[in-house]
Amino acid sequence: MKTVDCQIVSLTSLTPHVFKVLLKPNEKVNFIAGQYLNFVMSHEDKRPFSIASSPNNELIELQIGAFIADSYPMQVIERLQAAQAANEPVSIEIPLGNAELRLDSERPLLLLAGGTGFSYIKSMFEYLAEEKSQRPVIVYWGLRELAAAYELDETAAIIAKLPQAQFIPVIENVGESEIWQGKTGLVHNAAMDDIANLEDYDIYLAGRFEMVGIIRDDFVKRGALLAHMHADAFAFI
Image (cartoon, rainbow, N blue to C red):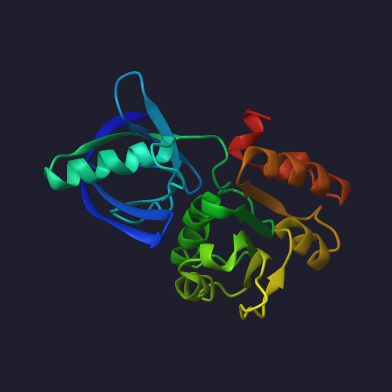
């Protein structure tokens, strides 16, 4: 891990509550898909965010969900906005995390995320597509409501580059007036409905800690092997 200054290339809104950040490091950085970084607010205040971009990309992408004013993530957005306005760099610590993509495995992949945990799995399937991986990949993305979805077409296009891949967004609550022809309910229930036996899969999970804990327990009951399940949340639950 090292500390690196970055220029802010762009800061845009994906939804009213999710921001996309593109950073250009002032020096080359190396990480493995699925790792995260710390955004340095101060020497004592460093805030973790999954890296949404592939390690092959010269820019580092973050997807930051900031739902409440003056919240932990919104303070980071405000710092980014101030630095962008002043044309000043920001600092990150990179790389961090132990739930990175296992590059020595050829097992089928199940990538599952809720909300902005999507950034964690996006780094992986983007990298796999760039590397022309032949591994079977199933990507599940769970969202509470349709309005929280973003870049669905772009995501489908990336995953379509993989020869054995599926992208399955799942909306938990669909309004009566909304048009949605995809899966509904809890995302991990959708995965268990689709996959009879999880034992053969390398599984990568991201989302709220309590969600990840429930998924881990339910997946184990359906044959998933703990040795082949990965999430940074496991260190905290």
